Image (cartoon, rainbow, N blue to C red; front, side):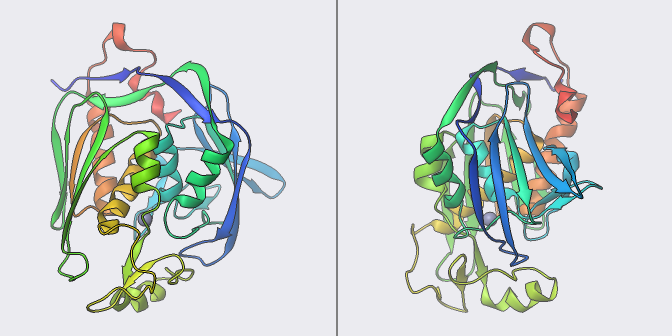
Length: 303
Ligand SMILES: [Zn+2]
């Protein structure tokens, strides 16, 4: 039997003070601003946006994922926010599980294409530990999902580790592997600065889909047939797999709670990541919850 529970390992965290990040969206190219407000231990991650004169809220949860095409968008019939993954990755990496994120605009600012904009701002503001125990989701069984030529495997573990592998035919990427342990320190030093990347040959397709309108060499590693077009080169020799892990960590957080387990990803992307979190939640929903380990019902993620 699959066995799931809400594991308690530490206390919930929020930001010490209000944080403002602004800039242009990678896909819409439009200016936007997010304000991350500290929240109480009773709160989770809530998105907020003024619609007319009313502030509307969307609690982070897998049922709010609206699109996974090239980026992850969340929303409901009130509003939609595009490209949330780098922000969510930063919150997951820093262990922040209580915050109200108010957005002015439709897309999270893109910064330099990595998570640096958010990571530096959170580091500057500081993190506040709340007197409420943290809830993490985990399963006691292994499972795997596949999509196109990629897969993501899960096995139970007491902490979150991601083993990421990619294999591109491009001579500047080829096969890359990186193991990430989810701690604020490891996230900040090894993952947060890894930028998004794209191939010049795909640029026209993305533009015709209304995507990548804000992307440039300032916020994207661009690859032509044989080389990297950015004159400053790479921040890490394996920056590509590090960014794939950054994306996966963010997409995992669409569950709405931190996750524990050992995850191996091969050729991951937003669509595969979303298949994985959907499967994870379906197994969690089916699973047995023991009284002595439960602080709240496993289904409470739909709050
Ligand atoms: Zn990304």
